[in-house]
Length: 197
Image 1: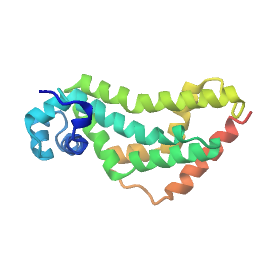
Image 2: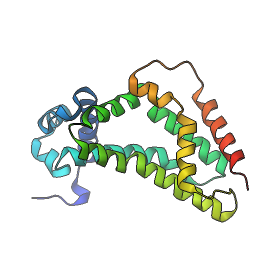
Image 3: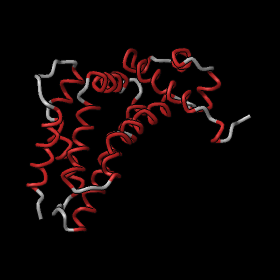
Image 4: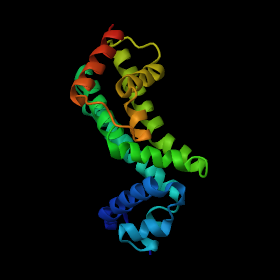
């Protein structure tokens, strides 16, 4: 019998997502639903009740990361504070060793499971860009920034923040030492200079 939303144990959902993330990093598309359930310590029925397929799990994992990265956009504040926080979160989530591991897992599974890779991209990176673009468009409308193409500007900002850091993480190449907080602040300041009204 299905449970109502208030009856769902969210710790089991998080355990499933954590287990799936680890297994996708290790095995790519070969990670089975049974292995995910086993690693999460839940029954197969519990797993399938929450996530009917690996595509659904991938979408949920990507959405979880996108929510974390875009959280500063919902918090309010002046553009520099918001963009610095977004940049810091991007660097933390995507340039940390575990961030590269999850993207490696997606890259490994892309040829075998293109629908999974597409679902992950749409729910994660693409959704993050859409949210940033919408925020930039609102800043343009308010006169705080002058951004004629918010979609292009969102991609530009992400690229400016990540540089080759994301690629290094994806390839498991060591990062030269850098101060993430300083890089985040510098990227925000330079971006704001470029789009000052």
